[in-house]
Structure formats: C-alpha cells, structure tokens
Image (cartoon, rainbow, N blue to C red; front, side, top):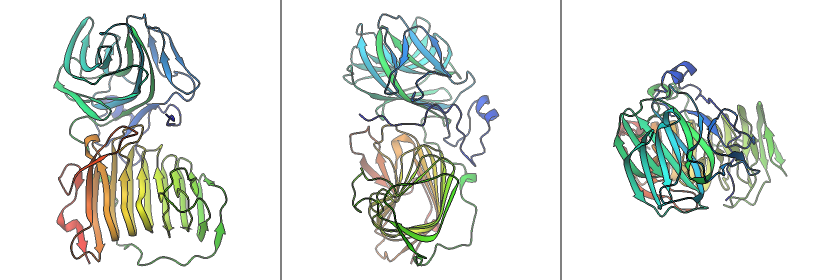
Length: 450
C-alpha cells in the first residue's frame, strides 16, 4: 500500500473563515465546523509533539510509527490538549503481534491520565472493542467480531460528543454508547502485550455522531455576478510538457495550456498545475489533453479557471482545509469535475458545468476518511448527471444556493447523491439522494430550472 503523505505534522490547522480561534479550541473545540486541528503522518521521522509512556517507539523509513516491545504491559503515545472535549480522532493502525487474546493495539480519546481514557482496541481475539478505561477497570461500551489479524491496516476512528462515544473501524460503526468517564482529554496511540504500527493521525474539531455542518457564516456572501454565459476565447496557446508548480499567484492572462497526459481517465497522469499551500491560479484556460488537471496540495484559490475538456479530474483538493473556486467553468468530464480528497470545505461559486458526470465528489475510498464539506452558490448546470456526491456515514455535507439547471425538463439531474464511504480498495455504495436537512442542505427555492 502506498503511504498517503499528509505533509508532516501539523499541530493546529485552523479553517480559514470558520471563525475558530486557538483560544476557542483550547477551551473545548466546540465549533460546529469540522476543522482539522492536528495531524501527523510521521514523515518527518520523529515523534515531536508526542509524549511517551512505556514501550519501544521508533519511526521507520516509510514514515510509520512502530511500537515493537510486545512484552510491554501498556505502551502509549499522547498528543493534543487535556482541554479538548468534542472531537473526532482517527488513525491507521496495524497490529504486528498479539501476546494473547486480550492483548491489544488501539487508539485513544479524551485521555485525562496515562490510565484513564476512551479506547478503541483491536484485540488478539479478533474483536474490536470500544472501551472506557479507568486504571485496571475496563468497561466495554460495545464491540464487534471482525476477524482482526496481524499485518493488516485498519482505519480506526473515535467520535466524542458530550457523553456520547462512538467507535468506527474502516468506516463502519462498531459501537456507540453514553459514558461519563471523561469529558475532555488528549488523544493517544496504545498497545498492551502487543506490537503495532500507527500512521496518518488526524483530529477534527467536530463532535461525532450527528454529522456536523458548516455554520451559515461559511456560505459565500451574496453576489449579483451570474456565472459566465459561455467559454472565453484564448489569448494564445502554450504546450506544456511537465507539471507547472505554482506558489503565490499565477495569472495566465486567459492563455490556453495543454499537452499533459492522454486525455483519458488514467489516475497515473500528472497534473497540469500543482499548487502549493496558499497558492492562487487565475485567468487560465486548460485545454486538452490536461492530464489530472490541477492539484491543490493545501489551501488554494482558483479564479476564472476554465477546463475545455476535463480528462481525469479538473482539480483535486488535498492537504488543506479551505479551497475556493470562483468563476470559470468545466465541460466534457466523463466522471467528475472536482475531487475532494483532503479535509475541510470546498467552496464553488459563480461557476458553470456542462456535459459532466458529477461537479463535485467527496472521496469515498481514500486512505484517510475525512469528514468533508462543499458549499455551492450561483452555479449553472447543463447536461450533468449529478451536482454533488457525499459520504453520509462520515458526516459529509453539501449546501446549495442559487443553482440553475438548464435543459432538464424531466428533472433528471441529481442535486445531492449520498454514498456510504468505504476503506481504500473497496467501492462506495450509493444509498440515496435528495435534501434531508442534515447532509444534503437545500430547499426547492434554491434550485431553478430553465
């Protein structure tokens, strides 16, 4: 399995525009916006920011944190703040040996001391169990027999919201219950008479359970600017033989850029533009072939960018928490236009899409199962199967306002398609569509048919 890089450790990542402050996070991370506030993929080769208690911990050459002392009664690594209350923590966990059926490798949340925590444990018996641990007293909140084995990666997630604690393995809830053991505390990686590896640790500031949605203040401000009526005429053309890296602002002056890849759906194609965190791409026409379009490696802004013929994807968002597409358009996307692999929110406004499968898709089988959001405003849609696809089991949301659908008298365009997200290597299952007030957020007045 190829390791997904999260750009090293990011202790506090705040979502731009979410109104979240460091002080608010320290007071309990109570914002309804799902900001990624901590992540570590150990690619820096160390455990800076973590505190060890027991065990033998090392980071190997592939950027995996390993605890190798299977004889250790209880080995732990802790990170975060003791004041954290409602949050979701997830990590990839790989047991490598179990000393007994009760031995465990797992993930912890709301740890108030080295022996008091909520723990999602993979047990040597093959079960996964969500536990309230207070010293030698261990209370099972719930469990499931999953045939847990050594040498296999499992995606574990614990969600805490008030007294409600939930545990997930590979995106499937295995336990949920009410428990008052701890109202706040740090995150942890844990083994007991076992050895294992840990990777891709992510903490979101949203509470678990009921999917959290961006507050009204995250909706783009009203604008009277309509999406453009047609595609612009290029001021010139430039063939591109290798990916163009962008940091800061790149203004293409509405020149057409083309020449990467084969114009097909192969996921191995290079992007035309690769945007560093904080970069802006503006006034660019992307012709065919365009490879994998635009990659945003962190927060990015795309202004007046046009895709004449989408190949694999028009743009892929990863590594950041806030991505904005303002103006422009895309057409001829046999699959999707915008692919959202990272965490946070994608804003799409003043945009038009024609002849596409989906305008937006929250990844349903990436190696890390983030909660993702999209906010769409002032968008014109024509001959497109679906506007947005999200994973409701991970708490994704899609908000729609001022959507105009052209040439669809039979109302065949799906506004919001719901999927059940799955682990990498599997295929998500479509489970429904339509407004529900929780994940798919719009009213009839938000959709206009022409």
